[in-house]
Amino acid sequence: MDRRAFLTAATAGLLLPQPVSRPAIASPARTLRSDPFTLGVASGDPSADGFVLWTRLAVAPLNGDGHGGMPSRDVDVAWQVASDERFTTIVRSGTATARARSAHSVHVELKGLEPGRDYFYRFRSEGRLSPAGRTRTTPEGETPLTFAVAACAHYEHGYYTAYRRLAQEEPDLVVFLGDYMYEYGPSGYTALTGRVRTHTPGKCRTLADYRLRHAQYKSDRDLQAAHAAAPWLVAFDDHEVENNWAGQVSSTGARDFATRRRAAFKAYYENMPLRRASLQGAVLRVNRRLSWGTLARFHLLDTRQFRDDQACEDGVRAGCDERLADGRTLLGPGQWRWLESGLRGSTTRWNLLGQQIMVAQRDHRTGPGREVNLDSWDGYAAERTRLLKSLARTSNPVVLTGDAHMHHLAELRTDFDDPDSPVVARELVASSIASDGDGYRDRTWIADALQENPHFSYIDQRRGYVMARLTRDELSVRFRTLDYISRRGAHARTSHRLT
Image (cartoon, rainbow, N blue to C red; front, top):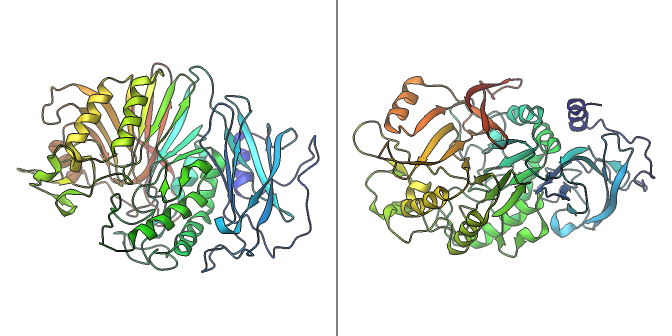
């Protein structure tokens, strides 16, 4: 079975047990009334000798209590890792406990595997077998890397065809940069092309609400296909908690925000292939590094949890001097020390900075004057200057970004108002998987935006994702777009290339 056939079969739930060189996963009598693997499987945070495997048991994923129809008891889950897609050679196996207090989620952290190779994994619980997934360990040396960049997947705004197309690209790694789910109730944020499906329940406020919302998203077969295709490196942005939250500050002024944020973090961890050390009480640590041999190092940032509140009451505004103030922080002191130390000490050929919000200066006004998005790095201008100075001292830096719901390609300059100032890095901004609906290509609007922002060379308002291939000497990028997501079946095509 070739790789593409494996992905098709795995995501359709068709990989049934095959004869194996060791005993198959034991099959105890069934006590659950239906399939507990309705949310699929996933892997993440690969290293040279391992990765994280994830699943969450839910026989009725949309039950209102957030427990997925599962009993209040803990449940044993057996797992297998094989070197081939038919599971004829099992290289690791074991049993994990899906605990009721953790929404019956499972996080298995593997070590001791071979570097730079594909592995296949699956789970069994109470007589039921999960779909199979493909993952891989990171390589040694300067082995080329193919990776996808994706973000922003509002469930109501469209079908997840982009996830299906991304899976078919067969990346080595998927980098997801936030807004995996949205907290709004039905029609809390409506796309221009309307609503093609409906959030349940209402606006997320409690742990049960967030668990249920994640389950609704994870029930989508196209999303399951993308998770089963490759390991993911994930971070949150704002909508996994609340629109435009900042540190301990709610954008709505809610007094119970600390409780709500903690619930959202717990649900996020339960539903993502993250290491157990990520969740530390009320803090969810997503800033971390991943090395792809000596070729590249990913530095993944958290631009929400440690930031100051947005200047001038947030929004897209002109004339906000507060945004220019020294001392305003987006990353927080601890994360800054971690980032600068990592950039300074990196010995890889490339350094990839994965983060959520646009770094490049972006003037949203056509004509005289300037309006900027105060939720982005434009709202923290002094700290952006510090970031650009650090990148200027770094080997081959590339910034990866989400949030904007449009593709952008930008040159990051030490002075955005001086077209002759040095370029220190390129920024690749991935459009959304679904947020804002079908999208469009308004050539007049794009021409005006490019004229106001000459450090941008490409903007596209359609949905999609970014595919990149990295070798020792070259970064090749394809911006992939879909013409529609309000109905199923759209093809992905390359709308722009960078070599």
